[in-house]
Image 1 (spheres, rainbow, N blue to C red):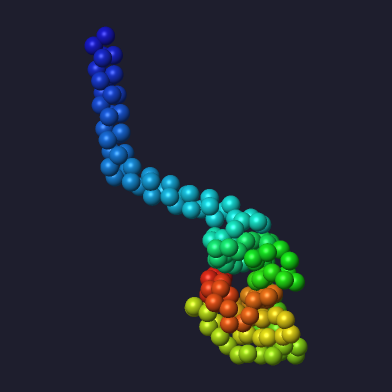
Image 2: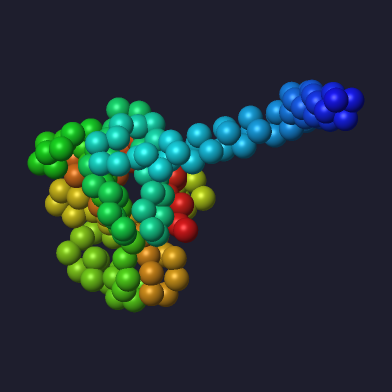
Amino acid sequence: MKKTKFFMLAAASLFAFTACNNKTEGGQAGSDSAAVENQAEAAAEVTVGTEGPCTAACAKFSVEVPAGWKVLKLEEEEIRIGLGDDHTKDAQVGISARFNKWETAVENQGKHSEQLGEKSFGDNTFVTFQDDSHFVAFMKVDDMHFVGANTWNVPADDATLATILASVKVK
């Protein structure tokens, strides 16, 4: 009987010590861990139809979706975001990872578009083009890979477009 009481008292003390320790150092670490986990879940929940602000990510890159915009397309190597679903009248930006020789891609785009030159958006530098109805921008990853952006109903000097292009992060 005395052994049982002793073990129960020891177990209760251990429980109390663990609970108190959890409320100080361990409890804070747990809440930090939970916050990171919640952020990861929030990022993982971005799907077609999700409205910004949020981060849309595919296998090759991620992009920040501004408030009021929504994710229209989310594929392995392409993300399209916009203010509405109709590309003939709504502002949209399509971003895709492309596999092609860099010089060839720039040369081909320049054949049917006016090349506007290099332009920096945040830390990202793009070679930019304007054709009849689209602003196009290429960001070189290496000699065989680049990220291309194409717009519908968004002018080249649009502040939201600049924010979107600055937010592109290649993985």
